[in-house]
Length: 137
Image (tube, rainbow, N blue to C red):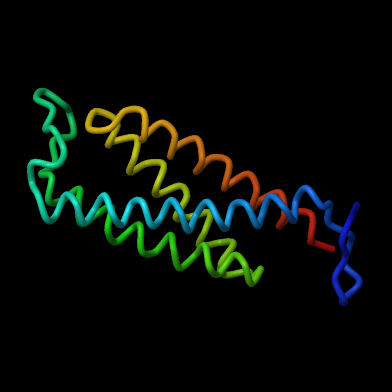
């Protein structure tokens, strides 16, 4: 099944529309979880186990602020994706890339969760770019 808009642009597949809605939902959830992790790191410095000898040694409080700010931005972009606004697509791609980079450096602190978030970020980038390329005339 395909969908078209009122402006006569080419039809978009149902998979792409569903993928964009799922990507928006994942962004909201991922941003909420990052916000909670950031708050946990800010409230309790002992929440994350500090790994010795890691090349990128940041203070847990710094990770907390990074996760908090990035998480809130991801939530806003996720809500923007539901409106199918062009700015939201661009911001979502940029924030998904930043989130993947952030969690790449966070692997020693939470390996499974970091790899999962990186994989979801890559999927979000695919879903947003797939839908955007399908809606161009």
